[in-house]
Amino acid sequence: MEDYIRFLRERVGNELLLLPSAAVIAVNERGEVLLHERRDGSGWGLPGGYLQPGEDAAGAAAREALEETGWRVEVTGLAGVFSDPARITVTYGNGDRVQGVVVVLSARAVESVQDPDPGETVRAAFFLPVALPGSCRPLTRWMIERWLSGSGRPFY
Image: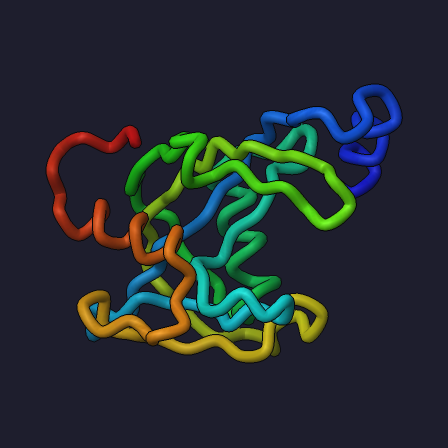
């Protein structure tokens, strides 16, 4: 994906890019949600990332879960599609601007099969959705709250 973003940046500079991404709310048999503590210091978050060209959202979510947590997950449905620019637009230190459209999928945590990628993750752990860690990213907390509410409105 980095090559693709680099390709786009060569053409548009720091201008806003609209990028599709996928994340997963993976739950274990106790109803706890799988999170990972991000290496970039931004706190605990859902496993997720940008879709690679030719990849679908479910495949991206499962790939990111494995990379960032070491857990294999089985996608079971749609948790929500999040696109609120006020919450999902990021300006990086170099001035690059990105707005995500995040497809969040629900999943079942199947098994831990490898260590998380140390370049992205400090550690991975399960938390009750009503007892998330204090350093949980606000966007993650918001997405989990929407998922928990089960309001029948999966688009935000």
